[in-house]
Image 1 (cartoon, rainbow, N blue to C red):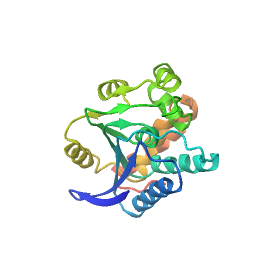
Image 2: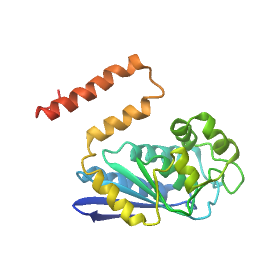
Image 3: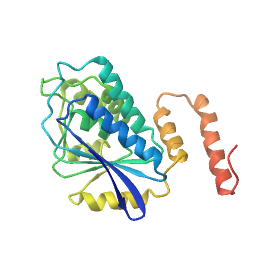
Image 4: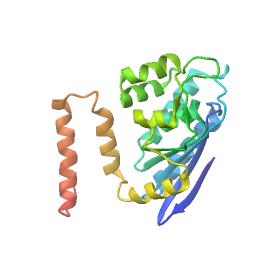
Length: 227
């Protein structure tokens, strides 16, 4: 479910995703709708409310075409010109876990459990595998991806998969939203892209892009428009 609220002076687009939701047209439409709303709102923040439901596993009627649409919707969410804050509690698996890995900042309740395995007993080989390997490294991701090792909130924080563990989720969201009021628009998207490409691009190939980003920042600091 998608909703729009306000925290302080900032507009917030709330998107709720449950671990037990099926990947299908309805869920994909919800993500796409939230992205469209953010794109229409200047300086908005996205808050992903990830709830702990028992994952249902892979749907026998799920097609690879639908999986492709789901992955593209998550990619759109991941590349928005807005900060995406994830709030996760209880069991986080399935589509909720995939959304968590696409967020910029992740807040966990003390009872959080991250689980990569489906109810069928095997981890889902979607782009979550790619994200977690890039975020924590192949060695640390091995047990999660190959054997579906479950992580507690503390363990997830230790790996850097969540940024904060707290029992006051609303306060944490408010604080983080206030702290990110300057992080929006194309400048945020540029820095996020530089981070995502860092592990796959050589220093020499990345230098030009980083210099262009620095030039944009310097021009903005001097009050001139980037070329």
